[in-house]
Image (cartoon, rainbow, N blue to C red):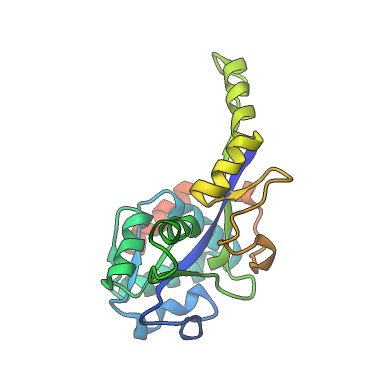
Length: 215
C-alpha cells in the first residue's frame, strides 16, 4: 500500500461575509450557537467518516460525540458531496462548510481570484487540519497483479503526480513534484498527530454518526 495524493481537511468560508479572524481556532468551536444555520457538511461523503475517525483518535470518543451533537444542534445544511458545499458557500446559502481543500482550489483556478470562497486551516494541530491521503495497493490475491502494479507505477509517475498537483490541486506525494503554488504548503499547516494507518474503525464511526443524529 502506498499513498498517491494528499488532501487537507479545511473549513471553507465565504470571504464576503467572514475573514479568518472570525473563525474559531479549533473546528470544535463550530458548536457555538453563533454558527446556527450557517454551516454545511456532507456526513455521508466518504471523506467525512475518515475525518470523524481521526477525531475519535485525537480528542477521543466522548468529545467527538459531543461535537457531532453540537453541530447537529446548530441545524447544519446537509449536502451529498464537497462540491455542493463549496458552491453553497459561494452563493451565500451558508457561511462555512467542512470539506477537502482541493474543491476550493479548483474553483479559484477556474473562476479567478475573486471567487468568494477560501480555505481555512484550524490552528494548533487541530484535527480540523487533518491531512489524509488517497492510496493504492495490489492484493496478493489479485487476478492480475502485474496489471495492478503497472497502475500503481503509473499513478506514482511524475506525469500523474503533476496532474494531481496542477489540475486536481491535491498534494503530490512523490519527491521532486511541487504542489500547486495556490494551495497552502504542507509545512505551513499545523497538522494533528494522527497515524493514518489507525483510521480503520469505520464501523464504530458510522455507529457514532447515527447515534449522534448526524446520519
